[in-house]
Image 1: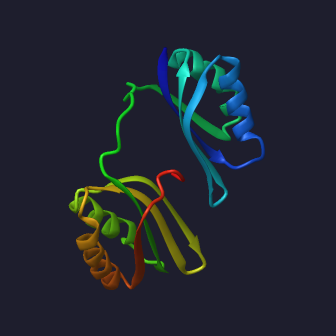
Image 2: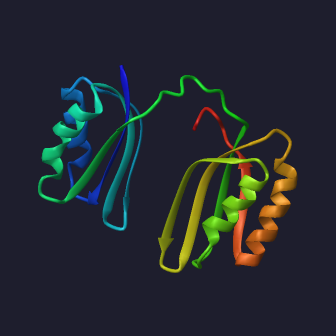
Image 3: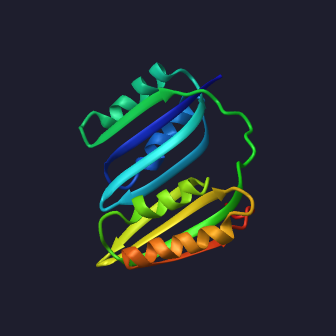
Length: 170
């Protein structure tokens, strides 16, 4: 069984998810992990599925991209298998006036503490910039990490919170 990483991007329109899912189901591909969102009028989807080979999926998705409205890429990947979490789950939320470097600075603090960002989304609403990140942190670093996050957030003029995540909700 092949494991594939597929990305689909382009101008948003109703039906993209259904169109892609129908193509994959028609090929006998099983959708295992996915993330889909609309970003300022553009659609972005990344998914992992198991099933046919990359070439067959690429050919089947080609008609969806034929008018140049979507770009679909397919790549074979190596399955990770069941990998236990590398740390404790936390959620970091950042909000404040938009400015360059917020994501870079705040995620650098996480990485320097041994953390791993497992999911991240950002939104700009007027001048308010919001970052929401799910992270895995090594056991016992959260208390000292909070001080570094607050210091960096202060330098950026934003607010930050770090709280344990409910693993049943992630």
